[in-house]
Image (cartoon, rainbow, N blue to C red; front, side, top):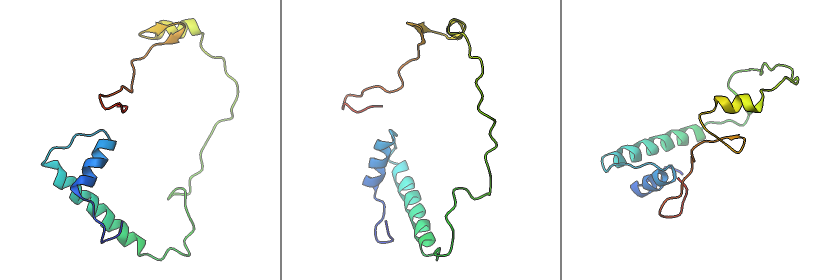
Length: 107
């Protein structure tokens, strides 16, 4: 979005729906203003000349310290299932995380 394209309350409502958030009428103008401030800041950053700047994957020159990948003995399935609050058919049973709503979308 450019300076001429601003986030509207309808845009914020759509973003909130996608993020599965419920916003009050009082929060709508607050979030609308915050989104627009973020986009204004991005417009300022887009004005910078970055032609001679190398792309970075991280702001610090860090290297992952990893251990050698060596096989290790694993836990016995029966022992693990004894530690689980619930198990079913030889697996740890967990409650569903995603549920269907009335509209048919996932939540």
